[in-house]
Length: 50
Image (cartoon, rainbow, N blue to C red; front, top):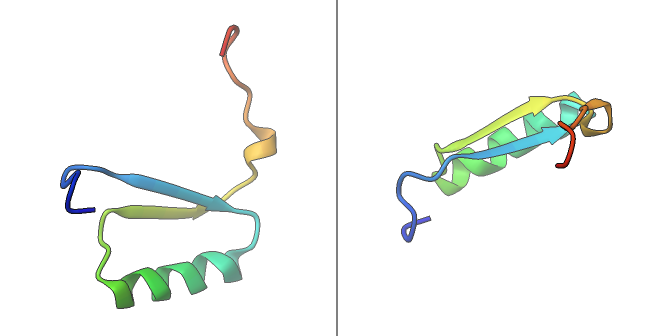
């Protein structure tokens, strides 16, 4: 992410084990600008017109 040094990325997954795996994998790659959490994107309600 050298092109966008101030970029923050969010990742969401239903399975906590996938989030744990992703945390470990991203740490081995040296990424520290990625936030991961357990959640259901299908449950989000978008504002009108989105």
